[in-house]
Length: 176
Image (tube, rainbow, N blue to C red; front, side, top):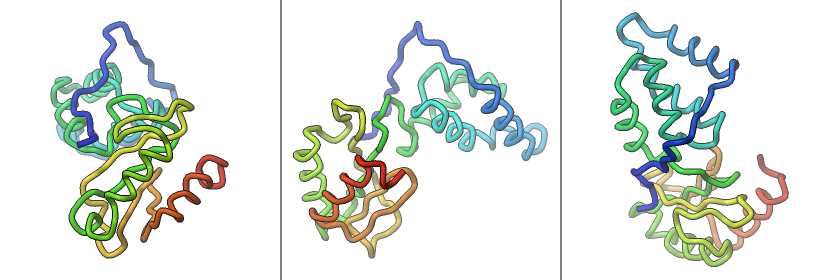
C-alpha cells in the first residue's frame, strides 16, 4: 500500500496559513450550523493541501485549532483518506487504481512501467520533483481501466504508449 498513514513530522516545523486561505476557511466553516463546524474538516484539509501541496502535522494542528477540535480528530481523517498527501509529493501525483477490475486489464503492468520509466517505486518522488507515484483503491471507473488520476483529472483505458505520452504532456506543461 502506498498511502503512508504516518505523516512526516518535523517538530521544528511551523506553518502559517495565508490570509487568503484563512478567509476561505472561514467561509467554508460559515456554511455549517453552530456546533457542527467539524463537518467542514474534509474541505479544510483539501484547502490546506492545495496551498502547501501536502498536509503536514503542523498544518493538521492548525486546522484542529481553527475548528476548536482535538488534533487527533484531524489526524484520524487525514490518515484514513488516500487523497491527502501526508508527505511532500511531486508536482504531478500519478495515482493508479490497483483494485481487481483495473488489475484485470493491466494496472499492474502500468505501475511497473511507471516505476521503470520514472526510476522510482510506488510512494516515491522523482529526483526532479516532477512526479510522485501512488496506488489507490478504486477510482470509480471500473469500466474504463486501467485508470489513473492526476490533479483530479482521470485518464482512462491506459496503455503503456498512452502512459508515456501522458508523462510527456505533464512534463512539458501541456496538462496542468
